[in-house]
Length: 334
Ligand code: KG4
Ligand code: ZN
Image (cartoon, rainbow, N blue to C red; front, side, top):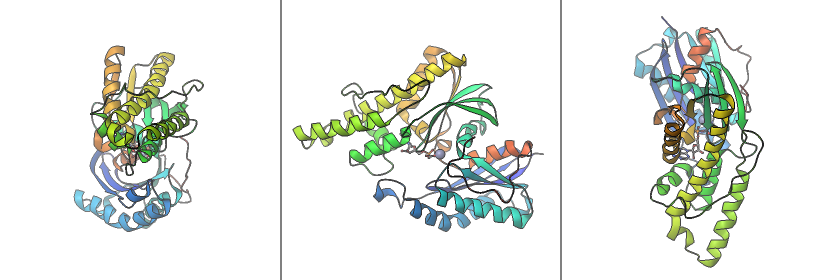
């Protein structure tokens, strides 16, 4: 019988708790903070306060929902980083207190590794080695995954993350935060070839999104000078064209990575993997290239504690426990 673990995620604007038993995720409770909508982005101080309010009810719900008593737990896991420090501290302190109170091991989990291991919650599961394109609000990486806990970042963004590029562009269009899903929605009705935005040349398998962000800013400024209602009249085409350019930048590097490493097991992870256009384009590319291709369920694309739970499961089996002295790490590497 495998371990029963309570996992907590609090790195950004979702307070989440999940219980995993014998490698099977039993539930995944998520409280999304709506407080940031009016600010055009996540406000760190407000995020920490909302986590403080949510953490007790969310954990209580996760345990009650599965009928598991806290005394049955074999370990408590939490997101150690990367993330917003004040937000991470809430989950870290809570998990430490529980581990101390129950006298059970504590497991600190890397948030980006967890996004990738979300692929091991349900079938079909990728075989090793595989390449994972991890795309979120804070990261854009190509990761060579050799085993559950053995990963190497082989490409990453030099500046903004692609989720940030989506959200900041949406803000320029006057859309509320987070704008990524809205761009995705309008893009479905638009012409992706109406406008074009440039890729940025960077070395190797790395990305840069600051150039396209600036190009988009100037494009809107110039078009609005000619017609002040330009955005309203062309929203679908603008979104479709921008999304097309961002997806092209991602897929170009992924294709390069697949060739360089000779790997045709390809996975997608992180919040932006919920993007319909990206899922579709990648599915098409996988068919052409004969890739075995894995996309997570929508529930496990954006931040959630189920992915922390599955990572903690693998760490438990290897007895990779954290000391109670472990701290939150805002910029934690694998
Ligand atoms: O992984 P995640 O939930 O949080 C981080 O770890 O950052 O990713 C959140 C990001 C946000 O930038 C959000 O706009 C983006 O994922 N996102 C999307 C979509 N759904 C979420 N971006 C584009 N299209 C979507 N459908
Ligand atoms: Zn995330």
